[in-house]
Amino acid sequence: MNRCVVGLQWGDEGKGKVVDMLAAESDIVVRYGGGANAGHTVIVGDNKFALHLLPSGSVRPGLACVITGGVVVDPETLTAEIERLRLQNINLEDRLLISENAHVVLDYHKVEDRLREKQLGKAKLGTTARGIGPCYCDKVSRTHAVRMSDFRDLESLRAMIERIVDYKNKLFDAVYGAEPVDAGAIFKKCAAYAGTFLPFTVDTTEFLHRSIAAGKSILFEGAQGTLLDLDHGTFPFVTSSNSSALGLAAGCGVPAGAVDFFLGVAKAYTTRVGAGPFPTEQDNEIGRYIREKGGEYGTTTGRPRRCGWFDAVAVKYSVTIGGIDAVALLHLDTLAGLDELNICKAYRYAGAGRSSQSTFFPANCARLAAVECVYETVDGWRQDISGASSFEQLPAEARRYVIRIEELVGKPVMYIGTGPERDQIICRSADRT
Image 1 (tube, rainbow, N blue to C red):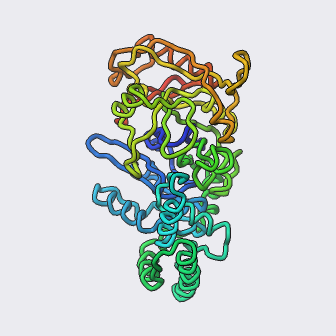
Image 2: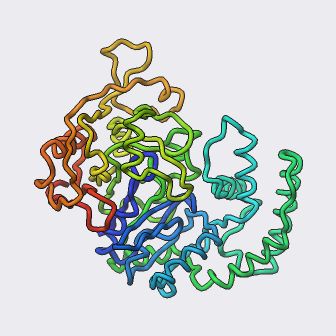
Image 3: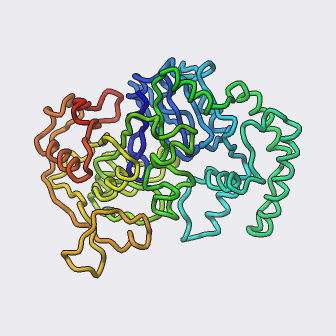
């Protein structure tokens, strides 16, 4: 079976844990979009793996791990990530494949990212400053792009980098009044990267299609979340790629029809990092309770996440546009201790009559900023659920909360997260699908 795991909110839903779980039943795990701005965490016993570019299934031995052309690769981050896994006795030498068509994030991209955000001031987007946006911009402009395949010819790469850096330095000086970057130093790094990554660099599209023909089980892993999708998210407060399920085909060259099952991941509440509208945000004691109990600080940046109630309107939108078959609802344990929980079941636009409600999410930020949430209040629970191993072991209030979310988003909740550990997840019966 070929499956795809994708986030249904503004990222940070816990995809890493779900991918790690499903990877145990897969032959190949594939990262198809985004860059080192992603942060996927897998906890195995006393070991915590924070992955940014490698697929979350990398910590499972024996799996082929693929980074496709839809990903922008930061060689510095990837080198460090591979080394950290090696020190934890996880070797990728014989099972990592990187697309020759993947674009490369270099030092000038990170400089450009920081300069753009600084110039925007209070209007900044809140990027991770990892150079992801500028790298995707160069990909689209074509003339200033470097791809993994370019590492095969170092002399041509040297000339390419000198030309690109000359342009970037003129831009940095004229627009930002910034110091120039050193083309020679960047090329020296690239020469070292070439020696490291060329053995892994292949045509991943061919590899995936051969694997499908051979009947291999492939697990596709999205980065960020659907509401951060460049075309279908809360633009401009989005990432620079198609981070929804819709990005799979473009990101890896495999049609959506080759995927048998799409699993969407959501938290039992809502979070987002950075700027942008957030209808259910609780900038109060409730939000702070969720943040501290759920450890809601960014894997990539360490920034505190904004926290709020579960938004069924937003999640149903993500389910609808992504063709999602079932949902994994994580962090349910975080909500223990609250006497009442609110679920946003509809939006009402400011100034509209009380009977005027909408259950379709407006990805347009101006419209989204104008909505008022229509909440449904349900009973909370006090019991610690971290040890629950079945749906029946959950408190009745927790079960009702999950069932109500199923009703509102229109898809079964197949997995329920009850804690951060690998085995703290309830798998409901297959007939939920």
